[in-house]
Image (cartoon, rainbow, N blue to C red):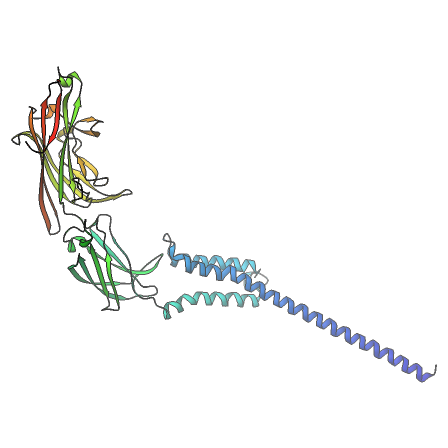
Length: 427
């Protein structure tokens, strides 16, 4: 091999080695670039996924379902959720501790993504409330437990300020009352922002809503001179039925076979239970209950309508009480030291219209409790025709009236040495 050939051979080897080195460097560079690109993509994906379920999802869940949580306001719940989600995202992405706090510093790329997301989330409600202020609508229209006050909620999510409302109430087809109110959207609950105003029931009550559907009460609300008009808002007919239109009386005997009561007779009347059924006319002779009505009545049992056997103390009933079972009235009277019970009764009208007048004795065959007035407490107990007269007065707002009812009973001795107490139509 000549010297020139040797030089050419060496040069070719050097060029080949240089080319291979260059190719290797390029390959390493491409591999490094691919790894960096993949790592960058993976990091962005991790940030996006973590922010999706750690920040964005909780925010929209609170916005969507938080309105149904009546036990906590969104003004309190939202900041709590935001702080908790930020702490979770910070931990999940391993953001670290800032250098000024003694840590190794934080990842700026992740921090920009996190804080940018939270700034958008915090600004979204403000933007929505600015550009998408909700229309005014009528929310709840409810009476308080006593039925004496009607509260109206007007809702406007994202709204505020003062508004005017013209309220008109109809009894049946007739307008019976109208008035102007001013209210502010200055409150909030689980359903959003609202304002309230109240109306006294006595201001517009003009008679019973029951029993006919033609006499129900409805309301029309005109807000801001026609901007929002809501018509035919039905009001609670039971609350708005307070006039007594039906009264019924019953005297039920308490029978005994005890010789201390009956002497030589086999069976006798040992006492009497008096009941008044007070309420509204129904398809039967027994009135329907009116638990919101106020009234008072007296009951007198007399022989032939002249000689009083029992003159029961006046009973006063105040309606409009309520518990978990429903509305009811409370009755009071002079118990005369226990002769006529305790002088107090609750649950009037809760389970029906009957008011069983209290006595000093009981008889399970007649009813529960001390509802028997023994014959020994009667002023007159001869045989004959007995009248049970009940006289009642009621009144609410501008409505008032009087009712009375008389039932008749024949008290007699039969041929079989037994006493009888029989209801008759007249005597």
